[in-house]
Image (cartoon, rainbow, N blue to C red; front, side):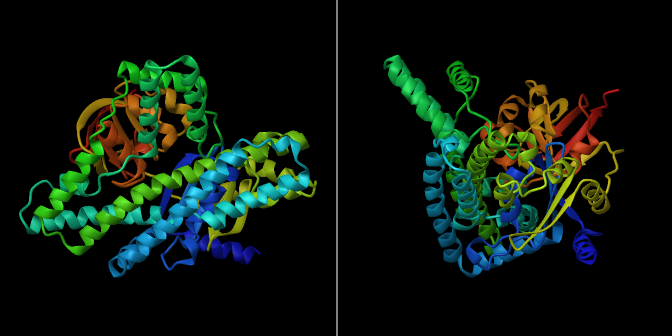
Length: 491
């Protein structure tokens, strides 16, 4: 066994690694860990060969090998250039299964699990896992493609513009990868506006019914890899109030404008095939990635529902159960699982996946030591940080480091939100921020998409922003050139 473990360690040692950070626990990140190394419906599209998920103090680091991402990106672009129809048909197949998933989700979400037997609860847990992992399956290759293709795309556009004496390659790259369809964030905002419109012309009873339907429809929206968070009536009413006051701006023509500008640009310039392929794939994957977030969040909501019931029946601390995996639920309910293993995982937990299967679990000190062994420290004595332009603009502001959702409240109007990577749970802080800067991501990541929709300057893929910057530092975010300059350090 030790020999096998050393073999696994060697896959990560002395390699350039990509580390994505989020709030999270094994029970809720499990489907993502599996999906990243799993081939969607056994297609020949590349997936991660190895993936490591490290959990500590309510946070997760997803550790991938950089050359894996490059391999995935090249593979998908090549496959798309060979057969566009096959990739689009794969997406359509997944979308059909996604529709079945939503239908199943709303049924299970409203079901009372306290009335079923242990045997039935185990069956529900197994069915949930198999349904999400196999019948729906996660298109994990999207991330590998994005990390490679974004850099490749910027390079190709810059080369093309230089060769043809075309100015402003950054604007061209941004236009060609802009969202042309609304995200679920936009869809929810539109639904809220409908409630406001109807509320002005109808009775309270009808408005209340609309509110209840909205809370059910978006019941998953406040959740994350940290677990399910209820979308409360109070939160919804506050959002309605912000919309009525105009605190949140919605540009209904944003996506129409993007589509038009992209079409005009493609007509104007004779772009090479690879540029057009990455542009088309980015548009497809932005949409797909958005649906995938809903896939993830609905799984989290249902998984927590099961764990809450296990916690109630067995009188086990729910916080401890966050470190359990789906294949352990039955053993826990039948008293055939040593709970001290979960306590050990609380001190550190490292899961290694390949080919969509769990290959190794490191717990406690062993996990911590492995994490230290494969990662390197970053030098912090720099005054300028470079990244990719995701949304253009320039602004000066005070840095607020957001490593966890626990830090969201410290972001005030005009602050510079600096995070490893933004996710749906960051949107409230992104609305207040003057600009967004991330360690990870590319021009089609969540931070890029939302910052454009909000009209905020954004620089992504800096790798080191959260390590170099500190709360209170005064910085200039030059998102026209992809540079963050430190003007004054907080003493």
